[in-house]
Amino acid sequence: LSPQVEPPPQLPLLLDRSLSADTLFAFDRAELRNLTQLNALIQQIGTFQAVSRVDVLGYTDRIGTLRYNIELSQRRAAAVRNYMQRRGVAPNLINVRGMGPSKPGQGAACPKGMGRDRLITCLAPDRRVEVRVFGTVSNNAQP
Image 1 (cartoon, one colour):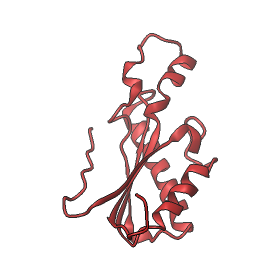
Image 2: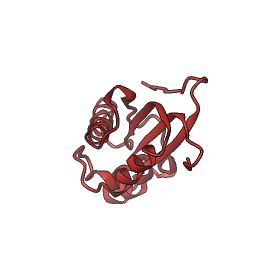
Image 3: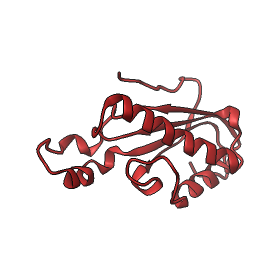
């Protein structure tokens, strides 16, 4: 399983932000806890003149089974979507996708033989939620 999400070429990418899942969620959980980054992102989305689409992509590390990680990443992306909707982002604009461990970050360099706690720390960059916003920016907004 290697899900890929590519933006349609006709929609300008206004914002591409990666949020640390370790900041948003407790390890191995999908309930939001620290909303500072997410609130700032939602505020920035509000500066755009016309948003056509918001993609919310959840990623996990490689610990656990592929099936479990895809489900966890989907639950995390859905939690971000639900919060964005409660804060005023139109529900019909938001697409969510659980990507599991399909695109490792710096964690790809973590050795397989390290202890669990060190591995969890090493793989932290892989646990993230990426938000991509497509549409039109107003003259006074900064993407």
